[in-house]
Length: 75
Image 1 (cartoon, one colour):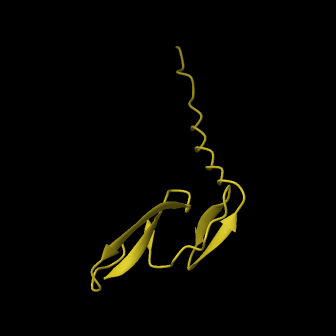
Image 2 (tube, helix red, strand yellow):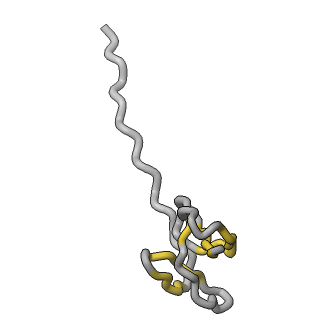
């Protein structure tokens, strides 16, 4: 058995780990890399292939701007 560690959409460790079979692959959003001890108030950020400790939770990117639409032409 081997342990894998889950990270969220922002690549931050969410505290979840599970054991999988030695011949199983690592699913998306998981890694074999062991996160470091995380001081209180800090976050473990997965920057493949390593983890780094960060002070603040990352800010999600802004959603893409909507394409401008043309007003209908009145004839």
